[in-house]
Length: 185
Image (cartoon, rainbow, N blue to C red; front, side, top):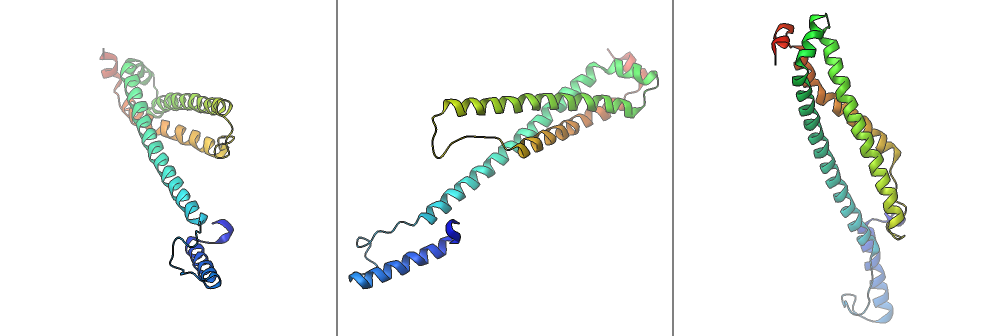
């Protein structure tokens, strides 16, 4: 809070000042028209609550976006596995272990998500820089910037999500029997 005072303390200070002023200038402390006092800490607390709600909303949207991305990458990897069933069968017939098949699919999945995440991060930073140049300078919205720790954490989360998204198709690819895969058209 501003100056360490909470909302309750600031309301008490307003009440004390109003009582002292009413005693000194001879007016009823309950008279709203006699003395106007503006409590900025209440407004500050309302703004902080509003921003906390906005932050929660952004987290919900971000979580939903990541879940949608996981589903999308998983579907893409399922299609990749389906299209490359014959190749996977040949690899297994030549002695590839299930782990090498899983790691191949996981590497592709991680590469796709890391590349898309990097493009998204660069685009976001570029858009933020463009907006900071285009928007007029204002006290409430000056010098928008990206927190480097959050950007790195988001990138790591994206790579982990890519690995999770590719795991199910990779396990499916690892269980393909070479004879069945070579017959597949």
